[in-house]
Image (cartoon, rainbow, N blue to C red; front, top):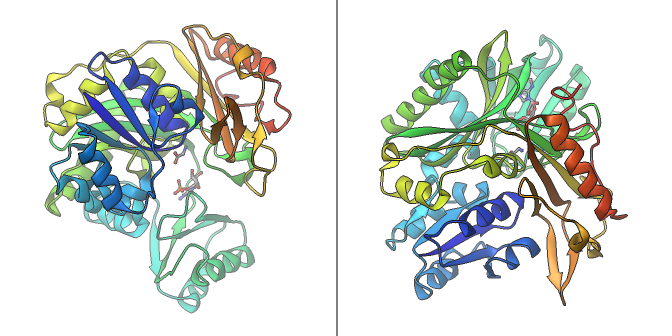
Amino acid sequence: MKVGIIGSGGREHAICQCLKNSNKIDKIFCFPGNAGTSSIADNISLDMDNFENIKDFILEKEIDLVIVGPEKPLVEGLVDYLEKFQIKVFGPNKLASQLEGSKIFTKQLCEKFNIPTAKFGIFKNKNESKEFLKDSNYPTVIKADNLASGKGVYICNSESEAHIAVDEIFNGKFGKADNLLIEEFLEGEEMSFFIISDGVNIKKFGTAQDHKRVLEGDKGKNTGGMGAYSPSRLITDQLEKKIIQKIISPTLQGLAELGSKYKGFLYAGLMIVNNEPYLIEYNVRMGDPECQTILPKLKTDLAEIFLACCDETLNRIKINWSDKKSLCIVICSKGYPDVFKKNIEIENLKKIELSNDDHIFHAGTLIKNEKIYAVGGRVLNFVSLSNDFKDAKKNILKNINTLNWSGGFYRKDIGYKVIK
Ligand code: AMP
Ligand code: GLY
């Protein structure tokens, strides 16, 4: 079977690696992939906004299954488009992808189906927003409605900070804004909860905690994710039941009432407050770097799982996982998430000796004349599995030290809540 993977991050390299291990798969294409995927797949460089070109390539090469990694093509309807040409695609359709594409869509779904979430209001202009902010409690949270690569959320400690957020959003920092969300600040511990769905059946797909801020101690600017560990230290059978009953099931039922099934990964970003889950946001894909952290624990053939999702037979599959703990540290280009230099060579990668429990997934990398260069903000994901988080981290640090890359930096405190 031939598969195609859309995306170029660490998540897609991890998916690619996992599919390479499947005896169902003969050939993998990555659109566009990175230096890591180039050693196991054909990297195809096409204009990713041109759905027709992507479709033509898939049909020409007779690709049997397409997996869409990132949110942008999902929210823009790539799945709906490819399915019109009888192409088998793993990922949610455009309507269901509104769960990530519009925070207001999700909030209104929460309201209608009593899904626990922070109290909120929707405001249509600067004046309305600022009037409301006069009597708000601080911190308060202000969010742009649309996709903003994780940057459209402001935690505001004062009215003046809140005004900056309102002005930036309505001035179009994240695209045209018809409204914004102001919501209650929830105090608790965050957790990422994943499921996979075929539209009818769901299966759990692990939990994780990521570190979104750039600086140690979870400080500084938000990033795509500086590291993660799995499982989350908060998960229990009882909490899992609550998450599925109070959050996941009503969401899928709500989508069904709107006429849409949910096929794909669903990532619930939760705040756990006194052992009760509140939905902070949905993502309609795997997390990055959570995917790199979780997939190495998967013991079941990922290709079989994806196919079952496309055929609505997920109920026939048992998904098995390793009991080990997994930790991931992301190496970033110096300067990220602000300006950073590109095309810096990464030497020494070949010197690193990986055990079966160690992995390096590439993100912003490019291969040229057999040399590997950093071309993105997040560059490499170092993952290790072990019986405890401390050992996993020790193994990762050993590998990072061997790499000894002067162009990069990483957070040294990843997993501090689970490593004493
Ligand atoms: P989001 O992009 O919606 O996940 O928000 C980014 C980050 O902002 C989250 O990971 C949380 O750390 C924080 N955040 C978002 N909404 C809230 C909230 N209502 N209360 C507290 N923190 C929040
Ligand atoms: N790690 C956060 C995300 O994938 O959105």
